[in-house]
Length: 174
Image (cartoon, rainbow, N blue to C red):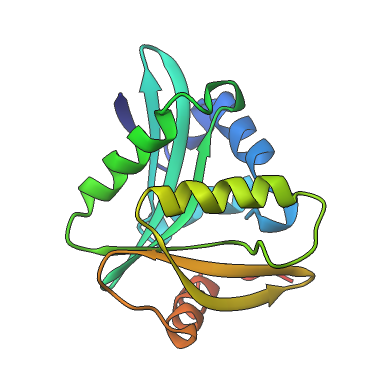
């Protein structure tokens, strides 16, 4: 698998990447594309695309933050899911930051919702790949999110709030 860094200079060169971003996450969980792109430089985001041959497989967006890396986005093209590509991508990105812990927030499987199957599948994927539940929850509008962590660092609700405060320095939502 080949990786390519996305920068503010090349982010809009690949419309397929933008479409994958816009279709992989619920709209209320997305930073609008035209607002996300400037954050790549402002927040030193690690926005990486993954290719096999010349075909885009997916992408990751990581915010390196002190001793934790905040895993913002992880997406694989729908037709390529279930083929081990997600695991390869996850291995590449976690090896890049070897020795530092990762945390991610994702939709809780404890909240009743229309996409429960998708939530359970995502949660199970991260568990299979070494992430652990933290039993930390936070609501954004009507969506309950939870945090999972990979590595030795523990995370608290205050850590999560601190990282959100860092994001709010550069981007705010309603």
